[in-house]
Length: 382
Image (cartoon, rainbow, N blue to C red; front, side, top):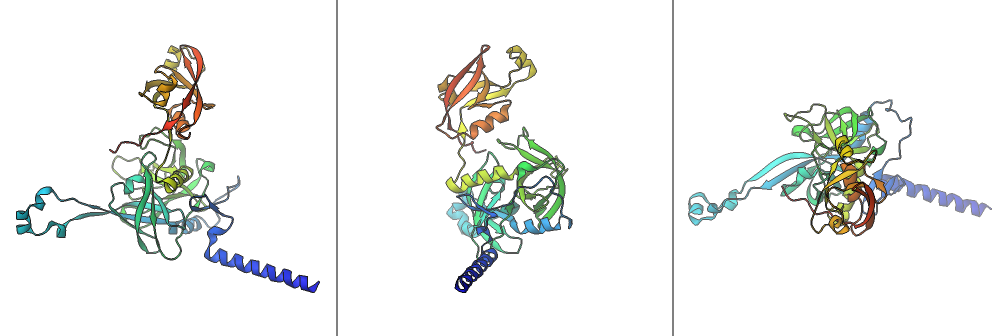
């Protein structure tokens, strides 16, 4: 009996020692660290209905999130005009390669989302960069390379390699956010250094802003200024709920109307970029217009909801399925379509190659066609 007890005590001691070592050196291996199958991510537990602002205020939330927010410096090599290659120019002014200028700037912020060194930022922060340098909150700096980007959500993933621990942020649950919730915006506005501002969630699911193709923004009045782009919007527990992306301002300063991409969308986009280098979305090749009361009356739709097909691209999946301009699209793959953004999101989330039913109203009669989803073309460079 005593022998069995000694074996049990030794096993418990060894298990506790291993747990201590993992907690100290590799916390991402513990249950609160979620592995997506693509990259290691840290995720918080869902909040309960009685979650409140911590009694200590928001300093603990700021302290938790700030190490994961970085400053992104970019440089663009300015190409010399052809005449500078002329031997006569070289004779009088020297070798242009020796004086090739670079445009250096601090364009924005980023959020370390994985201990592996992956950083989420905005596409517009790094799209024109030839070289990228990342400055961590602890003073360390590292060169970064672009893993991939998605102009249609204005998201990009870059990666750094650094010895030692890389402080990754913990993902929160933006789907639980409510108007009035307190939030913190963390970034590097105007290049003055890491800054934390406080506000509330002003609105949810903002779209039709013309900022990107796929819009589902969290609106906040936490001050967001130039340089905050790509920074973190965190909840009262310091968990990431959004990537700060844009502000509404006629003069470039904060007017209390800022927009952040929900962390759930950013995470899904990031995982595709890390896995394949880009984002693949479904496409049917049809342009639509939302139904106004006047249009619904003219088509004698009654209470029918849907969107009006205004254009069908040649050789597109929609044309091959027999969809025509003037059709009223009612549902896709069993999901009701009430507006333009719902149609865009539904189609883009379908995998290319899948055949789905689409219900329509044509000449007052309901009909259904089968559409083989295509691959959404890449947006043209501006």
